Image (cartoon, rainbow, N blue to C red; front, side):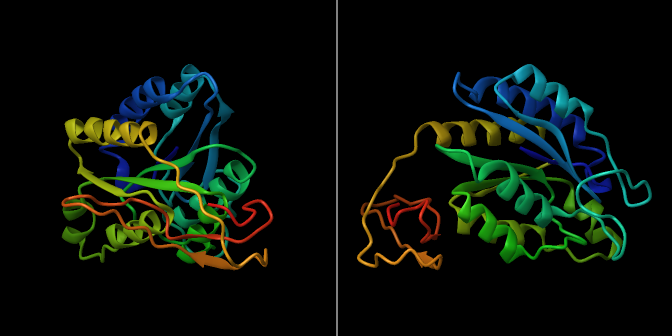
Amino acid sequence: MVIDTSGSQTRVLPLEQEAGGEFLQEVLRQKDQAFVLSVDVNVDILQDLTNSPRLLSRALNKAEINAPGSIGPGPVPTSGDPRGTVLYDAIYLASREKMTEETGRKALILLTDGQDQGSRHKITDAISAAQKANAMVYVILIADVAEVYLSQGMGYFGYSAMKRVTEETGGRVINVGHNPKKLEQAFQQIQDELRTQYVATYTSTNTKLDGTFRKLAIECKGDGLKVQVRKGYYATAADNGNN
């Protein structure tokens, strides 16, 4: 789980902490593990992989707003270009450093307004890292965008960016504004989806494990039915050509 602790989240951070802790308490099973990262001008590990909901909740509660004026330590360098919320870096680092070596079903859940500023990695890098880790990205868009961005004459592109990330990785965007009830419902939807997914397998006729990206298209016949699936995979030895 990645929690946005930039200045735009000041009003909603307590909601994120409470609902996120409850979600992890309910969704984790005996063999499941989760971690918590915060993202603002840096990306910081609040809790490494653990099966303990208590430790994860405590980590969420330690999260504090860190605006550009108060730069703290973190694995993403803060010198050089101005930084706001290095969201793409967070997705990249979480995928590469925390999820690549893990097995089983993997989901990265972001609590954020979706607006990136100052990441060293591009959105394509973030998507590629998540795809290579076989991680679905879910984004809970939580913020009063009109108040934080539009009223100040700032451009907002967070929704379209997060929609692209989630669609390419098999997850989705859920917009909750700053409504506590909608936030609870969003976590419930994600929990239901993580527990009811189907696994489809196939063997590619292209047996070369050359590291290239192979696109997939899956359709579901029937009125009102919609498939939520990642757009493809990288043909590496770990994938073995099967997905």
